[in-house]
Amino acid sequence: MVKSKMTIQTLGWTPALQKSFAGFYQNGFEPARVAVEDKHYYVVFTAEASLSAQVTGKVLHAAGETAELPKVGDWVAVKSVPEENKAVIHHVLPRRSKLSRKVAGRETEEQVLVTNVDTAFIVQALDRSFNPLLLQRHLLMVRDGGVRPVIVLNKVDLCDDVPARLAAVAEIGGGAQTLAVSAKTGRAMDRLAQLVQPGETIVFIGPSGVGKSSIINRQLGAEAQTTTEVRASDGKGRHTTTWRELIVLPNGGLVIDTPGMREFQMWLADEGVHETFPEIEALSAQCHFSNCGHTREKGCAVLAAVEQGALPRARHEGFVKLQREQALLGKAAQRRQFQERIRKSRAARRILNESVPEGF
Image 1 (tube, rainbow, N blue to C red):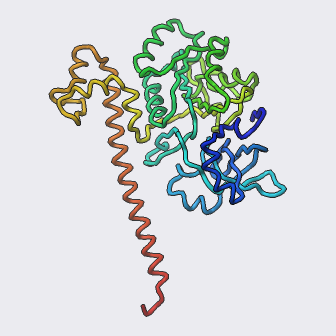
Image 2: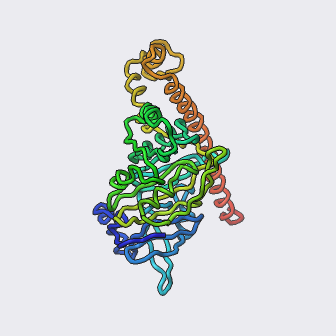
Image 3: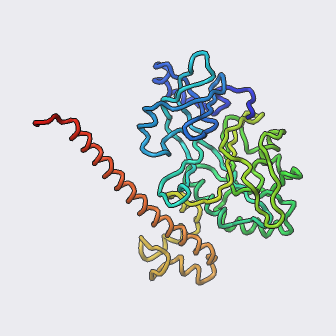
């Protein structure tokens, strides 16, 4: 783990956070930022040290969902353990941004990946693993989380037709800034570095093997993140990064590396859909029905644009697929919330019945 000139401001502390933390100071707490999460065990950075930490039982009990527990990037109120390199987390401060997905498997639950980030570098490789559909989903997650997206196309040295790939990305990018780089040769890495400002937090997301850790090593000038070679047979990489980790760069910026995701399913999105498909959002205003689903309705301006060739059919199909997934996920989430309310109600009645003395 790399640390350089650690101060509370280096970690991203702002005057607004300082003001909101006043009450915690009065009760003997100090601010810290979560750097590593491993189930209920953490590493937090304070202005003075890097400490191992755990949450209190009260915090653990009060969290209705695991998404409410501390995550990498969170600001927390802690108390240090005297004469030990440890701390106890008592409160999680409100988040100004977050990146979430649905947990892997059949469960309908939010998994918060990182919080309080300013910019997300969405990394794709310009080799056989290039996946525009996955890029589109990552863009949706980032925008819906209130984070600025930057598309980073790595391994430009392995691509025979860079302009064609850039054109494909421009079609789905929704105006997101795009950089074609090479962590191996150093191409455009200086432009990437200029986007990492002191006190700002950057997160790298993308599948395994696209070179996220290699890019970070270029920024650090050291092998801080372990890297592995991509298989030549299929262009796929192994999961080198195994956990999310907040790293302080030499220039005072902060970066979070994330593991490649074997399974990526969207969590509930709202504004991110509109920002990822701005051309469809603009056309929707011309539809005959205000609640048009853009699938088979009469007077649909979106369908008309597809038939006229003004809107690529692939863009429309991607939009409809995501909308359908969001609708199903929303229904599943509502069912889960309803079942949870019933469970809590039954538990409360059971506790009440057990507490009433006999004869009443």
